[in-house]
Length: 175
Image 1 (cartoon, helix red, strand yellow):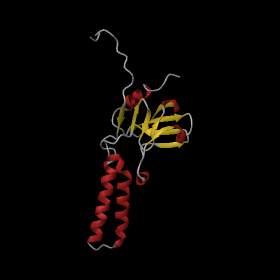
Image 2 (cartoon, helix red, strand yellow; image 1 turned 135 degrees about the vertical axis):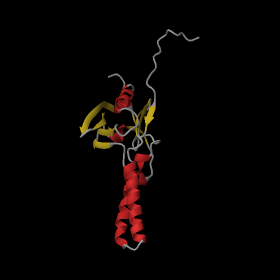
Image 3 (cartoon, one colour; image 1 turned 90 degrees about the vertical axis):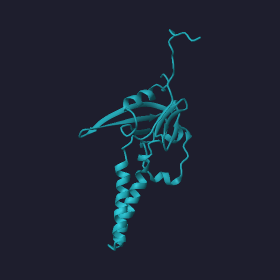
Image 4 (cartoon, helix red, strand yellow; image 1 turned 180 degrees about the horizontal axis):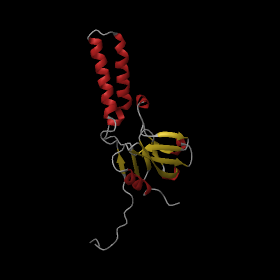
């Protein structure tokens, strides 16, 4: 029988978060609208010049499509390491520092997770995520600022940035 007064020391819990609903719908559906508008113009005899509008609209839709895949994990953590979509798992021992960077543009608060690695990204990844070649043309959930520095926007992900950061920090080994 479990002692109800015993303090439970649970470790960090694995988690994964995807894009927040509403993050990219305007870009994706706007691209589709532009392509449809160009298609209608071509169909009504306005000329082939509107093919540029169709191509630009479809290209924007394709590029920003990952922003509407809310169920696809973009960032996560478990005992294996830090997961970033498009990269894979980075071993916790390879992470020198995690920090939050906050800024704002007008009244929009932006929060980025800055991941500093102990060595270049290619060497720090313990399990690469396999992706089709065409996925490289789509938007990513991270920006590589240097060989050992990544930035992941948390304001576009589901859940409060502070909570995501706290859950990531729980996995950091004591230094």
